Amino acid sequence: MDGQRPKRRPAPRFCDRVLNVLSVLCLLVGFVLVIVYLPQLPDRIPTHFNAAVEADGWGSRGMIWLLPAIIIVLVPGMLVLQRFPWLANVPFRINESNADIQYALIVRLLALLSLSVSLIFLLLLIETIAVAMGGKGPLGGWMLPVLILPTIGSLGWYLFAMIRNPGEPSPSDSVDDDQLSSNA
Image (cartoon, rainbow, N blue to C red; front, top):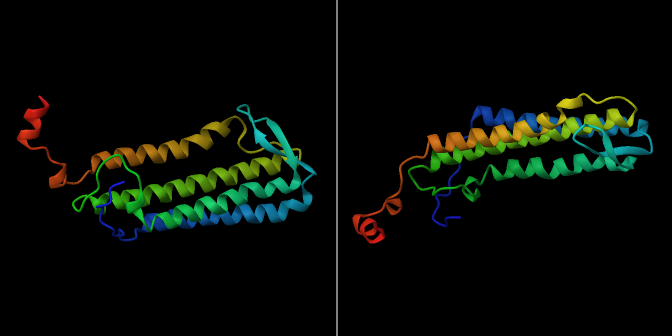
């Protein structure tokens, strides 16, 4: 990480705020679902699903708290990191000329990933409750694409946007004629 990065926060954007609110709502819905369904759950519940969306791992009813416990760490962590975009590890130099756009992109990526992760865990929680109660979950054969595509899509969008909006290179990024001739 470059120690010379500017340390400034991009102006909050409406879209990022909406994504963050939706992330928190998914988190809260997950907790409500656990509280509502916990008394009705059998003593053994599925704790893992294979690629065919068949439960292949089982645990005690208390394991239902594992998914909300993970999400209560991940989502707020990503929301806090949005306030410090200069800490992000990106594949090129961030300087004064490109910091505003790159930091805004990093904040958007974190908002998208926060929503993706919270939705993924909410869907896994719904699937777990449905299967534990003897039914079939809503994901069925779509489980893997639903779990993978939001995250891959968010990262793909970010990489495309980052490359498309690099900003101006800093003077220290440029190569002078002497360096070029010495490398030839």
